[in-house]
Amino acid sequence: MFNDIGTFELLTIVVLAVLVFGPDKLPKVIQDTMRMIRKVREFSESAKQDIRKELGPEFKDFEFEDLNPKTFIRKQMENDELGLKEIRNGFDLKKEMAEVAEAVHSSEAEPAGSSGAAVDMRKKPELTKKDAPQERPPFDADAT
Image 1 (cartoon, helix red, strand yellow):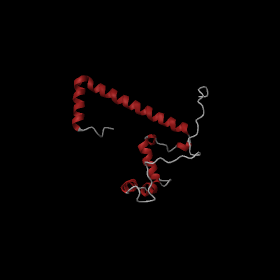
Image 2 (cartoon, helix red, strand yellow):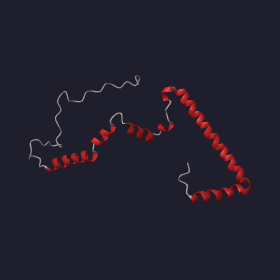
Image 3 (spheres, helix red, strand yellow):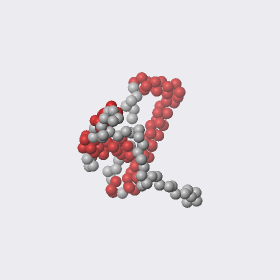
Image 4 (spheres, one colour):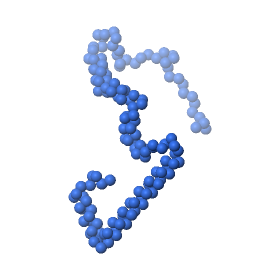
């Protein structure tokens, strides 16, 4: 819980506590704080047990840490029932993007009339009757 608090921070907290509460009241404040932390932990554990009991036997190994998206994804990646590792390893985004960029740059580099396969992207294609946009139905405010 306090893994990221260093010696200097802990010493600063102790000095501030002594200054705020005084050396006479400090032991009582520490006891009250520890008692409150204990009660909160007991309350949360009993709430977890109640939730597990209400969910039923199919959720007996359910952990509340799984509700954290990072933990859930990490657990699913370890399980790998869907073959996600194979998909992730087979797909190289940098390679795919380089191929697309190369294709775009090569089509821009060719002169307009040099190849019959090149398509002039500036020219608008002609629309046929079936490609023409359909007329929108009238708006009915009462229907929404």
